[in-house]
Length: 264
Image (cartoon, rainbow, N blue to C red; front, side, top):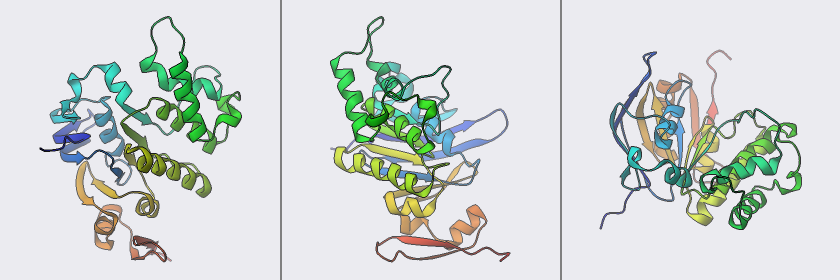
């Protein structure tokens, strides 16, 4: 019996009025996979995530979650199953860290009722896992960039999703916080079988933490596979326009990139 994919895009196309379009996207994301979506700015990474989340609706083809067409799944059910970690969240008023994390329980809350014990336990567990309990009462806006990103991740994990989508979760973070965030995500993937799809920029971090890389260029998939199949000098030169040297990582069985600037 065939196993139903966590997410399946079948011939998906989407075009903006500006003219940019994703076209002919055929992807099957299996349950428990950890996938990075790569590509230059404007290649369609965020658009692809929004199609998987149901924020955008394809002009062609179908997006299916657990075998069901995304548009046919009720919004509350979808919100309980798929969580999105944006690069940042904008708050219209001051909220504490705990209050932001509690937003992840919105799909479970009943109208005119506050959070119940199950909601509080889910939020507490997510905050503990992301190590943000020590500043639960601090204003979210007063936190550092790395701390805010962990709070956003706690909010998503409190949702108890089966699929976690992330839009460049390490952007604007220093190296220490980048490693911390990706280690947290990797741990949830391995320990809980959480399916992860993340837009990323850093190819070396992708090789370290992700089992599968999907490379986009001008709205189309140009490579899809494990890091050693996608991280190829000729392909990266074609897509990113940069010259790189690819060698084995000194301690891991993964490719490692050294950039070779043409003007130095």
